[in-house]
Length: 78
Image 1: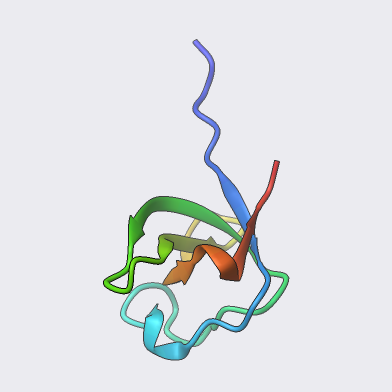
Image 2: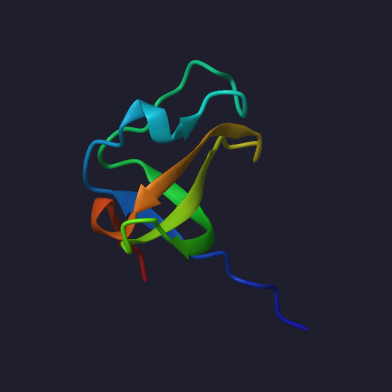
């Protein structure tokens, strides 16, 4: 059986801090343009925009930060 590949994306725009959950992760890290994240699941915002919950992980897979990111603020990686 093959492992499940987790979709990843690159942040391409500044993420407003009010969409970052600072209670998860180390509480000090912030999203940065160019950062690579894992996509958790997608949703549609109240304004009808496609978005997703993303996780930025450390090398040991511990959570650095979690945020709601609009589709226009990220580039899904192949």
